[in-house]
Image 1 (cartoon, rainbow, N blue to C red):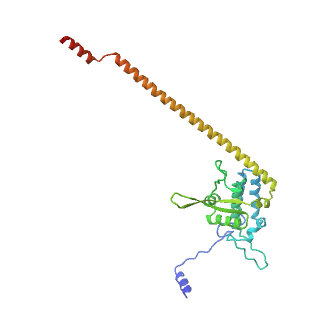
Image 2: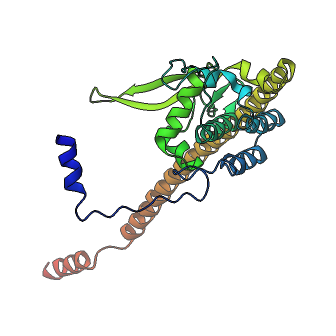
Image 3: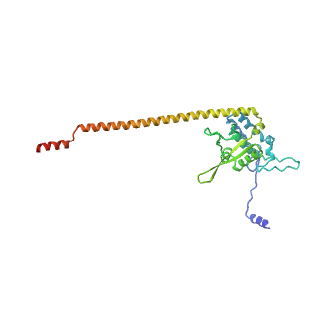
Amino acid sequence: MGAEGHIEQLQPGSQRLPRFNPGGNFCGHAPDMPAFRTTIKKLAAEASHPLLRRAILSIGEYYQHPALLKSIDRILASGEYRKKRKDGKHRKTRSERRDAIAMVFAYSLSEVNLMKCQVGKIPYSDFSGLLADTYDTIADKLGLSLIRVRRAFQHLKNAGYISITPRRIRQNDGSYKSLSAVIRIQECVFSLLGISKEWLERARQHQYNKWKSERNKRFAKSVRKQSERARAETMADYLFHRSQLEENDLLKDILETVSRFPDKSRRWKEKRKGTRQ
């Protein structure tokens, strides 16, 4: 009766608007016009290596052919197995979730460094470090909600295609600050996308040589700047001491010049003293 009374209270004066669906889902996703196509085309054009370009374009086939990443259809974002249908087959992933997974996975492949297969850039100052975007930044770049991005990463993690390691640092007050997680793409993903192991090894070696060459250039440039700065500081110190010596010499010359000419008052006193005598 409580539920019926609640319904009776909502009925007077309430105005219900019919839901109109021009096509697709009510969340704004149209299965025939997914958003991942534009994103993948842009990411593939900006890829730094042909291997990554091939991998990003291959991920786009997952939307129409979910069997490409078949483990995602078996495991939920929570890590549990999907319920099977009456015929014994696994339920399929919804189209809007496949769209988000394709976009998130393509973005991860576009930002991966092949040296460690980690999503992010390795700084030139520290090979063990990692500069990666947070979930909020990824959601803004892809135009997705934060919860959808997190759920897509959880799908990929529980399916065994990536590994996610959280990071945090301790601050001065004793509290901890969370950093962007270390996301590593498993090497089996590249074989699923039609990339051979030999090609992957050559690409990893090429990227490492490129990173090492750029690091050496930056190091040489910084050393040259430091030597030039030290030389400039030394020259500045030399000029400063020289100016001080010149000022001292000038002051000495002035004192010597003044000492040559006696004071008028002294000469007047000596003259007056002589007249008295």
